[in-house]
Length: 82
Image (tube, rainbow, N blue to C red; front, side):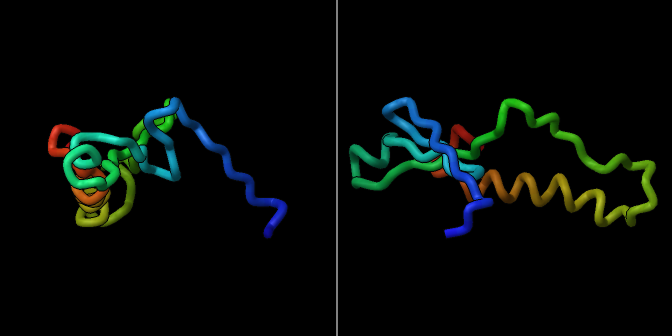
């Protein structure tokens, strides 16, 4: 155990936030026993990205948005959360 690492648990009885996921009992739980997942965004997230006027190559700038979209597809079990 590392004393400098701290975990917090946010739960409202039906869901729990863990890292960048919200784990909850959704439609899949009642039909097949699997927990559902959706992307958790902290309330302080300002969605700040590197500005297009920076000196980064254009493919790097485009990949930030593309990677974020792929992450939403991978971490959401219900299509409505995409």
